Image (cartoon, rainbow, N blue to C red; front, side, top):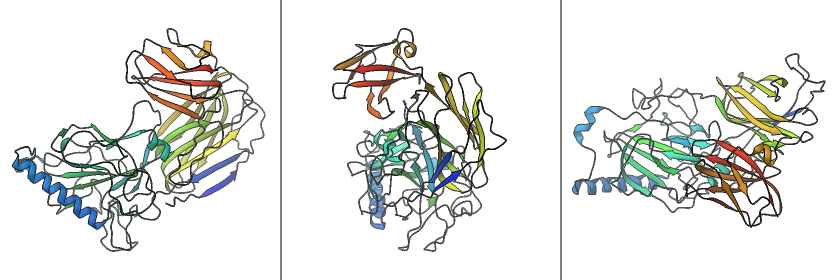
Length: 471
């Protein structure tokens, strides 16, 4: 697989719009980079695979009908087509603002190659020299795509209620290019007879429900992976009006959509869905583009000392040239360390920026890193010089023994969903998903001696960070 990025270094000059809490030479380096998904225009399924999928689903529908188990009735068509919710959601225990971006819409231009028309009369789609025109919507993970996949951070949910008419699992899920392998997928028929394909799922994540079982609106049916012909973790979402597959549907309504006249979305997102996916602080430069399929090294940290170098990053989707991005670093007393604006110079489905500063942190406590873009403001909090066991422990929540040798026990009145162990550099060491609702034991026997941070997250989304010593 080849993911390309455009990397540029910009030198910032002292601007009147900057507000300082102290004298500072602000000639700092900004790094920005573009992420391009599926640059090689890899078809998600081959013609032979597509025909095999159609045959399998048709045979299963026939069998369900013979057994009087088929939910769809011809009379249901009079009720109209479904209105989809978005088929991706962030799993519990994670806190990105958003986890995906769109790399390709349905291609409405039957000619090829490089003759492209999406529903909005633009070219945010692809075709290939072999004659393939993209027939679905591709939603890829962003940022830290492989780490997201490994952590099962983004779930695939049923965009409309319906009946499972086929599914497939067990395929390799770290594909980086064309390999002629079939994907892990779920196929759902809706009340009106239309069928949705959910492809490229992570191996082992496909719902355990069987063919013929019903799924409800928003039910988790898998997690995003990179199985089959794929250049990275993404969902391929493809829709047809019926089991004869006589009419492909583009769920987006627009001037150049000649397949259907109205939107199939409950709420259709804008063509350029500009916004913020994440606002993060890092202890070192984030490694965003390792060789496929190596997981990224985010170097995320929320705990620093006053003399540390802190990397301030923001990860955007659907950036449009000329857009304004407003950024602020705010001290614990709510005064401003830095406050500035940049203007996007490039249109891209995913982009990131980071800045790094040291020797400017003159207050201890909870700081804020705030970014405003695309009509939304995201505030990320981090601590400087205040993390110790007594200060970080909420009343009635304790970890023991501390220091610990083998197991760390969490005593809390809350119901916990997950926990994360980070080293002092902010590197994620271990992820724990709690299955018991009252006993929270964490095995630390395999980690090296030293100081670590334990981030615990309740089922209600509450978070707490505690320090412990492994000895």
